Image (tube, rainbow, N blue to C red):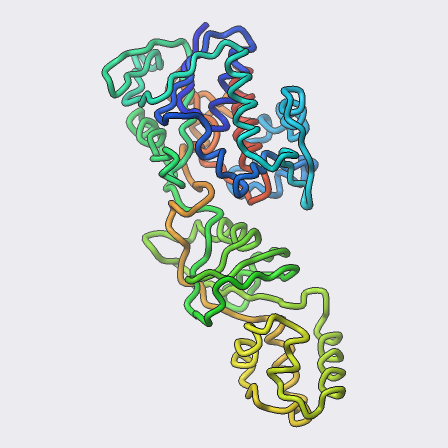
Length: 409
């Protein structure tokens, strides 16, 4: 049995290895000059390759089509991913939030491991080779044609071309095009794990916040909340918790705007309830009764945020502490726990860490990743309409769906 795997990213390399280790003759086709270009920049170059949580928590972090991934994740779990890389010579470590990285903090070590295993497993790797067409006859995929006009036959053809984010790495949506040409439905690709654009610009660019809670609010109702780190940019906000929130609201974002109105609310003191925060303010004001508000609040928050909080509280930063009324203090506390910004959009899809949307999972068999429309044609990894939050979940899904396909032989 021979197989062609199109795409030399995380899912493609893993799938090619596992197929070869089962005895298949495998050709891995990659249009770039090297393998793993997107994998190289994941996790800021550190490669957060999985999340070592239990599967119940893992499923809770899958945003789209979590049920579709059930068989794949039980078949190849985070622990299996850890075992695979450690068995093949990569020492790993688990950090906060169960995020797993190579001990070296170098994504290149993960790529080198996969390349070495590809060679030792006998996979033929063809770089600088772009596929133009998947050939189908009598409802069965049997070959691919390259842009050079070469036709390569195979018993099984695996599409592992990723999404359309980070297009400089080669993710240009080829898999979506082939899927559509062969009659599949493709869910509209949208940016996922992407910075959020804000209406208000207060000159906060570069400000990093830790241990805060950020929430998405619509019509006065809190829809989603995330706790952790975030960062203000020149046009909005980014950072781990913001990226996750973007994936939870991007289904309502299309054609450059949202079809509903969202606000971002930041709780700068999530460890304090309102009463405790009020008492803290009373204490600070009493101890520094003749000090201006703008100087007192630096004990509670970064200096660059003070004027923003005071403005949203409708107070005067030159006001001294002993002149602050109870009503003003309550407004101040409310703002500290609900600093509010208007969301106007998301960064474009090329800024997304991953792509939301893709080949409709209803047309793919979750037991072996084969198309329900075309025999011997398989879709794995990010090309599928499956995406998860940040923290190693998406790479694990790439590895798990690759393994699930390899079980088909």
